[in-house]
Every structure is written in C-alpha cells, then in structure tokens.
Image (cartoon, rainbow, N blue to C red; front, side, top):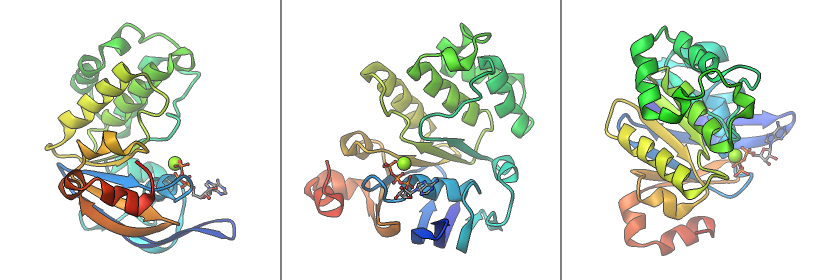
Length: 232
Ligand SMILES: Nc1ncnc2c1ncn2[C@@H]1O[C@H](COP(=O)(O)OP(=O)(O)OP(=O)(O)O)[C@@H](O)[C@H]1O
Ligand SMILES: [Mg+2]
C-alpha cells in the first residue's frame, strides 16, 4: 500500500500541494480528478521524488520514500507513465524496454509478456521511439513502466489525445491489471472514462485532497461529480 500524508510541495516560492494525502491499495484503481492546475501531476511527481515535498510523507508498505533519490524510488517498484509520455526519444523501442527491465533486473520473460500485451511494439523494436505515432509512444511508455513489474503504477492522463481504438486498448490493459498485485493511480480528465473502471476517486482542489469517494457511489449519482469538480 502507498500512503501520502500531509504533503506540502512548492515550485520556487509558490505552494502547489497543500496537505496532499491519499491511499493506493493493491488490486485497486484510485483515480485523481480535479481541474487543470489542481496539482494532479505534481502529486505523482512528488511520489516519484521528482518534486521534493517540503513536509509530509510518502510511505510504501511501511517504508518511507520521501527522502530517497528518484532512481531508488523506481527501483522500489513504482512505475511511472508521465503526462505527455516522455520516452528516451533518440533510443529505439528495444532500448526503451531494456531500461525498464534493468531498473529492477527483470528478464526476457517480462519483455516477452510486454510484447504480447502490445504486439505493435514487436514490429517496431528497432525503430527510434521519437518517430512512433502518439498511440505507439503511449504503449511503449506503458510497457516500459510495466517492465518493472511495479507494485504501484502511476498513469498521468494515458489516453490524452489518442483515438478511440487506442483508448480502448489502454483501458483493457489497465482493467486487466486491476485485481492483481499492483496499486494503480490514474489521472484522467474524462469522468465518464474513469467511473467505469475506478474503485475510488480522489477529488483534488487547489492542491489539497477534498474527498475520496467510492466509484460505485458516483456511478449511482453522477451529479455528485458536478458538485465536486464542476466537470463531466
Ligand atoms: N515546473 C513548474 N514550475 C512552476 N510551476 C509549475 C511547474 N509545474 C506545474 N506548475 C504549476 O503548479 C500547479 C499544478 O500543476 P500540475 O501540473 O500539478 O496540475 P494538474 O492538476 O496536473 O493540471 P492538468 O490537468 O492541466 O495536467 C499549476 O498552477 C502549474 O502552473
Ligand atoms: Mg497534469
């Protein structure tokens, strides 16, 4: 289980997270919902150690991650698919996967499973990843994160800007992971897309956690979402 408590984070002197708190459990999908600029991406970056919390804690299965360098946080098994799917653009598909595998010493069996999950990558192993289509890049970013066999998977708007067939594929993969050993934190703007696969939804407002609500409650009363974020 991954727990954040009382996280304050700043860019320069500007405070962006104010007492951010959440709990992600294995086998579950926790969705983060909030307006543009609410602090969703910053929350994920803080978990990864890419933004340093000024106070508060990030705890994974009883161990504090808060002071660890970013690479060690990945080694603990936190897979991260950043918003805008940042790959090593000059490297090939195969090399990007290799970096994911090396992070936690995973081997050919994991690589093979990724290529089964995303067959399109198998045909493009030697292609420089910067030349992949947007959807292919997203698949590679997900495959690279899954090469860690992560205990926690952070997905920052994985379907942003993709066509429906691609969205469906990513959705299938996320749904398949659900119920396994991975805790998934999913940031999505599209409420309709989130509600059918989420277990719980955390509403974030102005850098602070507002409320965590069971997705089943929101499915039964979609108007609630309006009240929390005024979107959907
Ligand atoms: N590197 C940075 N330097 C300064 N301010 C930043 C930086 N990154 C983000 N911010 C600011 O921090 C706030 C939170 O940004 P963040 O990216 O976490 O929001 P978000 O909820 O992910 O938004 P979106 O839905 O648009 O992706 C915003 O006001 C943003 O302008
Ligand atoms: Mg964001």
